[in-house]
Image 1 (spheres, rainbow, N blue to C red):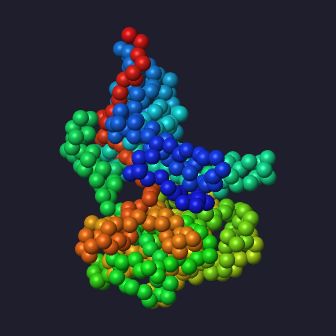
Image 2 (cartoon, rainbow, N blue to C red):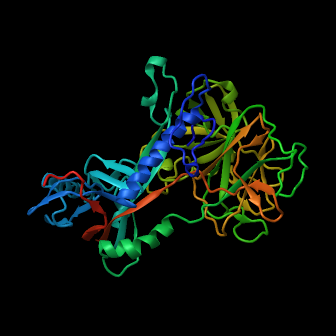
Image 3 (cartoon, rainbow, N blue to C red):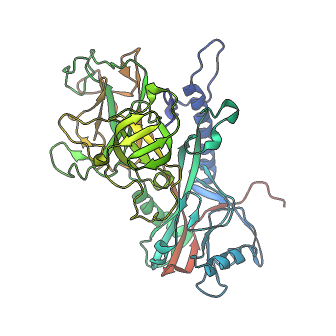
Length: 502
């Protein structure tokens, strides 16, 4: 999350059950946020233990079909012609005309039903019957993507949390305070997606759950998303280079406490320090911020190379000439794609002038399935990476080089290291690590591990990303012919509510 946070303290391995306020003590944002995280962890773990990896409350049926919809995110459709619906009796009578109307309007009549569904304990809610291409968080212009498909396919749900500020949703601001920025929100995002299914025939729900889904899940969720170590560098820059030993002279030299954010910009594989593997032009890249990427403002207007923005409050945390900034918007963020990095040539209040020679691509890539969609919530975010002395930035970001001997210097003595877990890491765009740095200790707060050989020495522990964590569940297996549905098998799990009149 890109919040203006002091640090993130929740750790499920500590097994804390609550935060207890004490009189006369300082209260910090991390305590309140940890209380929320503790409660959510408890509720979601309880739901996952009772329901399983995914499931929803059972619908109500009679002899003619469904009469009450409870279990959400069912996939239903109509035939290319006539009034045949898939699956049989899968639609309420009042929903059938809506499906037929969509077909008459030239839309592929594949719909997502309303209701509730739990994925790894996270409650997914949909209030209305939604056509596949008009999902609230994965909008498409048309059905061209679906109409090209023939064969056996899996429809599944991708669930994750998005950090939302007033720059994303202006209604968060309190107008009684003059529109002051207050607390932010975490928002549950669900997206129904399609992928080819490696099978010869439509599977049963039981067979797919036991054999097909684990293989798909492995492809969707890489076991190794990369690991990172962080530490403070020796104060004179040439201390002990043994990465297994934190020098007693190691020190964070910043004048303010910071929460550093290291985020994957371009996904993929990292470079190998031996010179083998991917090249710098192909490697995954990172961007970093000393304030968790919180300097972000809406773009009101773009005039040539100038961006007219809003939100100037504090010059000490504002943009400056030479900064690398990321221009992004909702469609890019919701599709898991990074924005465009470009360097600022000049800053005059709320007018940011871009250096066009540093732009790596278009702000809104027209060669994607989002072509023609309205740009929503266009914004610009400041990052703090600079041109290294001996290497080049790739499209404004730093290529990842993996290896025990390779450290990437950020600033003020803070440095990071990649490639410290199992081999063959796959870095995903948007994954991030948070590194609190404190003036009082002259160091960063980072988990340590004790080495067996040599004895009694510690070093920073290699940690997986803090997020973003995606959760997945299968919804349906379908056979398509040029986008038209021939058959559907429901792959959702359903449970009977405990309170039933008998």
